[in-house]
Amino acid sequence: MSSVYIETSIISYLTARVSRDLIVAGHQQMTEEWWSVQRNRFELWASELVVEEASAGDASAAAERLKVLNTIEMLDITEEAGFLATALIERGSLPAKASADALHIAIAAVHNVDYLLTWNCKHIANAEMRPVIESVCRNMGFIPPILCTPEELMGR
Image (cartoon, rainbow, N blue to C red; front, side, top):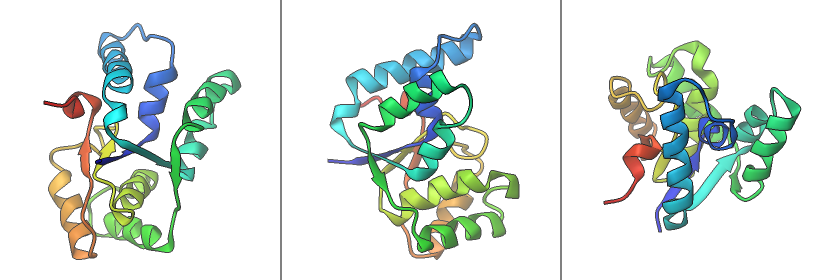
């Protein structure tokens, strides 16, 4: 069974009120569909970084996010993941302001997770950044996860 690291944006889209923004609402609908139809095909993983990010903001909304996260196994944030995240920033894969995004990628790579599921297309599921991210991971001795959105991981 393939494994998926669930990044914070997935949990946020899954639990948020439907947005008035049509694109965001479409992403929310796709996330709900993936969650109800596809998630059972995968081993789901998150990390304490996801829990930390999901805990921020409105207390009621955070409680909903944490309720979902309680159903997902947690990966450790290892020293290796910290080193890889630093390398992703230092080698130009991601900007310094995206250190948390680099750590999400690093946690998934260090734990050999197959996919990293996200709606963060600015720094994570970004086609222009992907080759550099993958190169840094491989140069550091890790197989990079496939960085994708729920729409891309809907099965055959």
